[in-house]
Image (cartoon, rainbow, N blue to C red; front, top):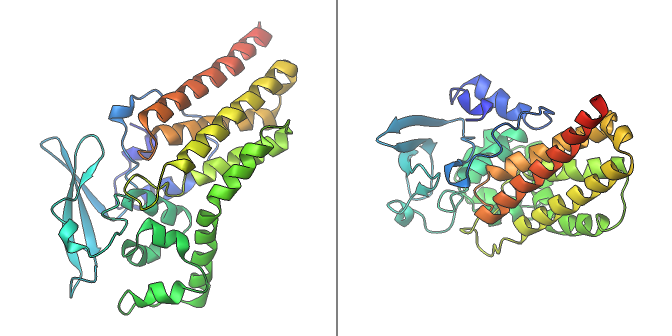
Length: 297
């Protein structure tokens, strides 16, 4: 179990723990080799009640409001040990896709908390991930009008539109990074690219339930991880001692390993992609720490 999964849900410590992940340079990757079948999504939604009962995890959505209900209701959703939520009994409640029946509640909540937008969770609960990505200054009023009596300030609208634009820009940005990484890049450039991937992994990655998703974003992220590993290998091989003694270079290694750890726990990635990521991380650790041992002798 990862260290931030030990916090009691619904507490300030849990929220602070999730927020600290955003820029945390911690190098705790001892759990990176957890088998994919045992991985779980980070329980990000801080307003969930967490209970163990006969090998099941029950998430009780608090004050979950949907258009079909005249008042806020509480809906119990059962999650099995493999981390996949069974909402088959509740699908008839929804007239369209939302992040609930797309099984995207947890990743969206992590994103909202990290971006300090979790005060608007009721707004986002009514939408699908596809709709969330499409929110902009021209159409946000239309989305707000779908939720009865929902009020948002102009500043809040602007912040939401800014963050959703970053979601829309992910695919073209990743394509550019892939092209940049085909050429030799500086350490500063590589650090910038890895930080972008790290931030990207705190955003909701569309899963197979999201309309129009073909897994391209996951494939692009994997390609960036692969090409970044090649760049790191080249730099370590060219000037090993300088690289290992460089705080900038080692910070890139730590951030790369953090990205690998995030991918390994994200259920939107396939088993094969997770296994490749673990291999990438192990290759990098062996290259770096093997060389460190060489220069410490």
